[in-house]
Amino acid sequence: MTIARMSRIGALLLGLAAADSTQPRLAAADEAWPVHNRLIGKDGSKSKDVSGIACTTAQGFPRSCLVIDDNVQDAQFVRMVDGELVAGSTVQLIDNTFDGEPLELDGEAVAFAEGRYYVMGSHGHPRDKKGRLDPKLDAAEIKARIAASCQVVRFRTSGEDGNASEIERTPRLREIIAAEPALAPFLDRRLENNGLTIEGVAVRNNGTLLAGFRGPVLGGNRAVVLSVANRRLVRWIGPRPSPVPPPARRRARCSRSRAV
Image: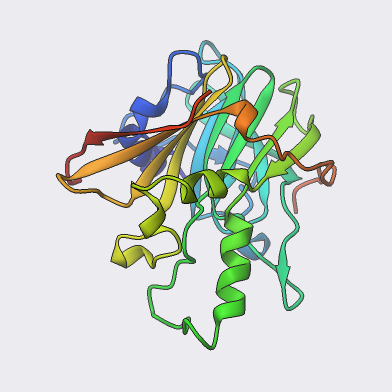
């Protein structure tokens, strides 16, 4: 696995890296950084869907970072040196299940602020490219998978591999989204039908969380960034499982986007 593909995606969301947030320098689109050890993906296999990364510092090497794969319940520590990544231990973020099977967080983005990592679930309808989910027959599964992805998870860390404490999660962002007239009609809609899904996050040191939406695309080809004061995400629930070794006001702002 290399970081080149992720850098091309990350560059699209670079505007979410607010001045107060700490984000890594992205590799050039044609630059491949090797990964040592294994980044864990679905069913314990090698990750093919790393969707977010954040580091405790934006300057110098080595850096302590966290990555998220959107097919798992865990995040994973990585050590970034100039030109390569070293995969470390994982930390379990959620434990949602359906019929005894674990459900993915569908984590799409990571941010770091004031000693905490924040991992954002997609808050969207489950991916279903082949149309296998029937809205009636599979309603219970769809509901459970949406609930699993409608969480923001945070934890404290010193930056050292495996150092995670006060692991907490909150479903409150979904309620805030549902109260936004511009966003509520797209909640739980299938993604190919301009459904709502989050793919970027930044957290400012003043306690403001910025959620960047891939969908919906609003009239005039506008993309949405939702700004939420951290104190409004009051229902942080914890503690969560320990790390395991690897195998201010709410306001919606729209900006013009270009097709990619």
